[in-house]
Image: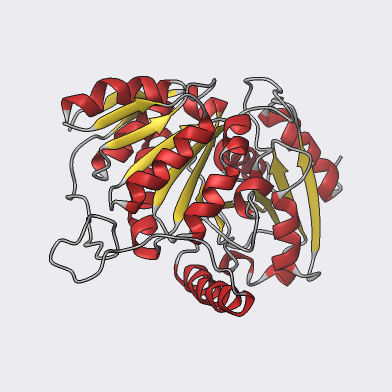
Length: 351
């Protein structure tokens, strides 16, 4: 089957369409603007709805309305735009409404720049809005995986009635790679008896709401959500292990940086160093299983495009069983393979 050359941002849109999504609300912002551009053309062809909102705040609240009516709905933005959506994301979680949110991260803080970064890790995995909540967070590392994980995001959102965030960066969004667009299976659409679609033969209308005025009722609801998050943690941890067998030194990286990390592992292995890599695919729930034998690893080296965020989750799961070292470049600066390899040699004491 011939492959198609596709840009990463277009792949987010293609993955959503393959998942059965026919509604998009958003606002253009670099470096993700090709997502709305792509969907502005494709969705009307499919009988869907594309609407450019007047702001990201409007977009996320439009998502709330479409999700409440039972539709698969997507929005996308880049870092400061996602910041504007945080209140709406908390409302979506509190109302148990499924949707998918794509963040193609840029350098920050503030307006920053349009270069690739991973500074939004905390915002995504720790719940950037108010209240106790979690969203599943998926981190693709290739254009093909963007399609696959965006499709998966809609399934997970519907299964758990919860927003799912898919994060990339300016490199993944702008790069082009060959992808297989062959249809492998139909979208796994499920019935949504809770949706606000009128009476439809019911005696009472469905109501979507996130307000629990009575503290005890709010506590019970939060504990119900906590049980759902626990199921997510038990069922949805995903990762890739690269040359992890017998590795004495292990790199940990996600997204674009994991691609750099793989090249470092290949070079290190060619020079006799037992190096492997763990690539978290779910940033939340963070994958714990590949760290089960942490005491057999001499050191974990966490690579990030920020000042150190995922490294905190690595330290939590390692729990003092061995050393954890961090190396990152913030502000949109991307390290080279040579730079990371030389840093690795310093850590292992070779240089």
